[in-house]
Figure 1 (cartoon, helix red, strand yellow):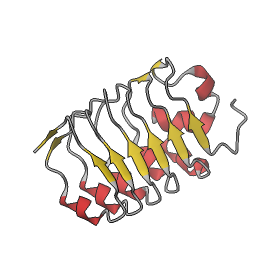
Figure 2 (figure 1 turned 60 degrees about the horizontal axis):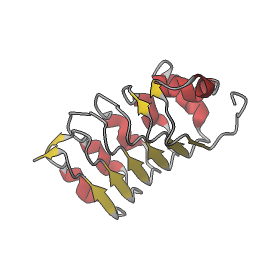
Figure 3 (figure 1 turned 30 degrees about the vertical axis):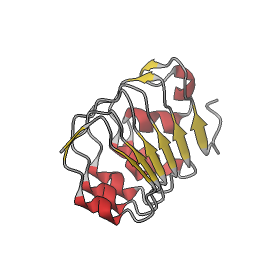
Length: 157
């Protein structure tokens, strides 16, 4: 698997991965470094990655800020894990992203960054049941392509 240099999508939903990324995925050196935050500079080498889907596992790590350097990624699904921490304000750099799904069982406990309003191509933003708190950023009014916004079961004020 580590020889897949032209990988454009990684779908590993509904598996039994626990804690961190499994060994097989670690063979994709650039992707593994990005997800574990060990080499943020590696993200430039993942320019071909358009889809990252690791939902419904038991992953427990912070979303690395290097993820926001994937300026051409279209789809991000990290739902139904045990992710922690905050979403980097640099998420606004992911200009091409069309949908982000961070729903269910993640534990962010921070506010939604205002830079999310820079994601003008965003069609779907799902943050349901992920312990977000505080106000909905006013910058969300700039998301003119948005068709679905799910903020249910959080501590939004």
